[in-house]
Length: 216
Image (cartoon, rainbow, N blue to C red; front, side, top):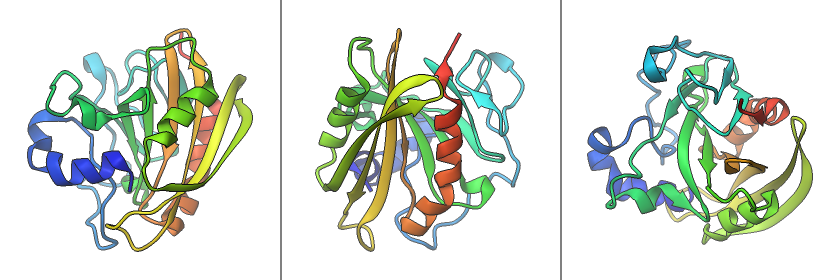
């Protein structure tokens, strides 16, 4: 569990319903209850648009309007994260130079974890710079490895690392990729409750990476 998950688990949980929409950290124990959403449930969308399930998000009328679009895995549900306007909680939603803006929840598909989308305003930042700042904010990250790659047709950098937390059962794998758009940098991160959940969710992460494109 990273900086965001630990802090929010201790501080934000008590007021999450009043301050944040759809912004929940990964459960801290394997016996965590599944989401209240039934399998196949969909997230609410902006401006009264139709719900989105297992299709592209990021464009207008989807749960999260982003600088990029990508496809979600079937039954994963996307929700916009809010709270940056509240100074008491804004720092909890920041990591490195980016801010958490969207969570794509795997629980309706039977896994415990999220794809989290973080965005920054610096359009001149390289994907590598965005990721280095992001991982640099993880105090317990180790075995960090970067690779230059592609996300869709976009130049991207990907990072894999191991995260250790006193609240978890042991080190667990994490990974993220970053791209730069005219609207700034975007980091898409996959965590998970543990190594087994992380591995099970990798196809959804790879789908997102493979279908990433600059939003119109």
